[in-house]
Amino acid sequence: MYGMSIPRIVIVGGGFGGVYTARHLKPIVEKGIAEVTIINRDNYFLFTPLLHEVATGALSSHSVVEPIREILRGSNVHFVQAEVKGIDADKKLVKTSSGPIAYDYLVVSSGATTNYYGVPGAEKYSLTLKDLSDAINIRTALIKACEKAAMTTDIEERRRLLSVLIVGGGATGVELAAELIEFMRDTLCSYYHHACFDSGDMTVTLVASSPDLLPVFPQEMRAIALEELKKRGVDVRLGVNVIEVANHEVRTGKPAVIAPAAPGSPVPHITQTAVIESVILAQTIIWVAGVAATQWDIPGAERERGNRIKIDELLRVVGRPEIFALGDASGTYPMLAQVASQQAKIVARNITAVIESKPEHMKPFSFKQKGLLASLGKWYAVGSIHGVTLKGPFMWWLWRTIYLFNFHSWRKRFRIAAEWTVDLFYPRDISSM
Image (cartoon, rainbow, N blue to C red; front, side):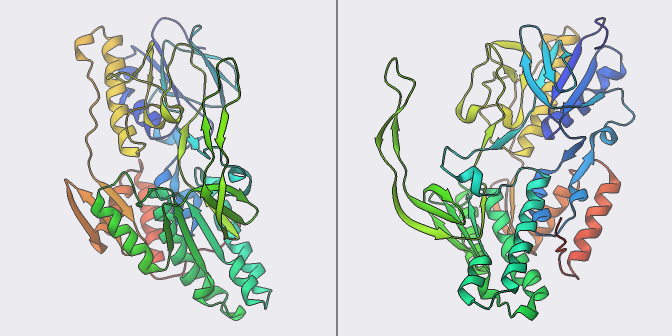
């Protein structure tokens, strides 16, 4: 695609890892000693930590995206909007819907997809929250349910239509539950007052297989999150295994026990079948129980738990030193935006060191936890900063401020700040798209 005179760096993925790597590589592009191309399916960078606010009408869909070309404006970094079909590591080619793109160094920051853990019916009968369309689908489902509920006089049917079940007790599930209960009981209930909706008719249930919410967060934060969700009216059920999802219902109990396949047999051996212990009914089911790295076969690369690519301390793919992996696509580190953004700086530094023939400048990656924050609805958040746990309105303001300044352009920051300000005085948006 480009000349062979200088090294070609190709970045797969336009999320935190990919975009930040491209920005850190701009100096060597400006020096003319490397060409950088970033490939992404969409032409925008999506700020995934705020998707739950789009799903509940607090932010518009355009507020959480920034055009990648705008982010890279003023640089000579190339952008290709295409679907990645695969990677030929032997020929050093990225196969895309727009044709093959050659590379000398490859950065894999392809993110992750929803992990359904093989639970029957989970993908078919539940919504998820990984991209912009998912957020819009959740809001649309809630509003359609309200429209149906407004047309029935059967109280039990109305309550069934106005019920939401969230599967997953991580940060996404917790923040979504807090926003949903507020959106439903404050905003939707007020708009459908003519239908005699009562806030008690609207229910949000959160189930998690772990014994605590936010399992990767400090214990004090977990306890605060649990207490606050219950206070807001969320029915939290911990230590619950979902073994099957059907149309408008979730079945819980003891999952099947599966032993590895016998030698010479491709079929695993089921030593104990699943046992259904209870059924939870809900009109809207949302699955946010976990993620798995996007699957592409890279010859010679090893995989870890969740299909994540095994990397060394320099963030190179084990067995493929010309390929770097970071963010959710790579193993070892937590799947957090701050991990990907820190890794991006190291990846750019190490590639630059190789290109400039200065291997002594390569640096191993060491994750520095800057803090953990979780929003629990309007005016309330909990966080841990340097080992100190804080909660309340100040943390909510800090959470929003930190997220706001993670956007690249001031135009986008002003737009989000304006929407958040309007939300303080007016009901959330209930447009169905």
